[in-house]
Length: 336
Image (cartoon, rainbow, N blue to C red; front, side):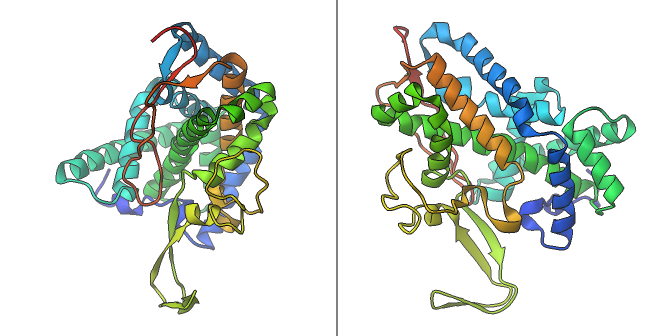
């Protein structure tokens, strides 16, 4: 990075406003529109089966590391046209981005490590963008670069990184968490797991309930444009507001038994797990397909899946995202 590209300018759609937000979102929507997500569903399914082929003979697995973390990252990298061989490094860099921007309290050593990884990530993405400008390919990353340049949306190198890194991070980190949350809760209530195994089409309901009950996106920051009153509290112009998405999704006006995970729930829209309005997640369809296919293939291939004794989930510290801090063991055969 150069002195003129500070990391705090690497913004994404999450932290920009119209008219710039509108211009950038139009470009990203157009790029996604040109590569219909449902067309790659067979590829996602093939990847999921390939992963299970590797672990099925073992009879057990560390669920997140061995399954949940592998599928969404490979999918988004393949979709963008980024080398899958770099997946582990990109996942580590993505963790650095989340730590720098969203983690909250870190030790000095953690800040230094995260900041270094964040800058390395920016350099890596800048090289990819330069390569696509010089020699476009048949991939989403080339489409994004071409459309942004053609539309003249005035994204400098730092913001281009912010948009692409957000697609990568949101395209796999939250999906990893959602797959893990859904499977943990389904296996915690055997009846629901068996219902899914009997009818894998229920995966869509499981994804919707997972987003409501255990939303990976917990909250988001907003700044009041003018003096505003919320529930009797005055928020002055320029005041910051932490909007609690997870709390809204557990509100009883949305779901009568809101504190229970049940794929049979009839919920009132909207479920805010993917955001709403101008900030609705641009990759929501890809995320839904990722997680639906992940659940369907598991139910079809490993109907005897169960939580290992003592399995539980703890969470990483974070202000706006809810992600597992630990793995959990699952079993489906005699192996231990």
